[in-house]
Length: 75
Picture (cartoon, rainbow, N blue to C red):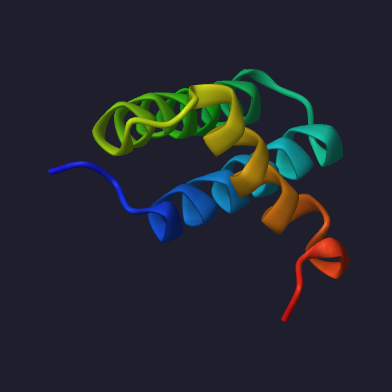
């Protein structure tokens, strides 16, 4: 079953958290966790975009905008 857009937002948040953990404590474990989280997000974006017939880039940017710039998202 394809991921929902809300799933993508959750996966992007997890990837951002993993990146912050790596930045705070660089090491093989935190780097691998960051890369795995990023890979999971990218795979879900590709799947969601294909299922919805949307541009993969547009879907990715929309999810990242919500996570990285919530102040820009209309309430």
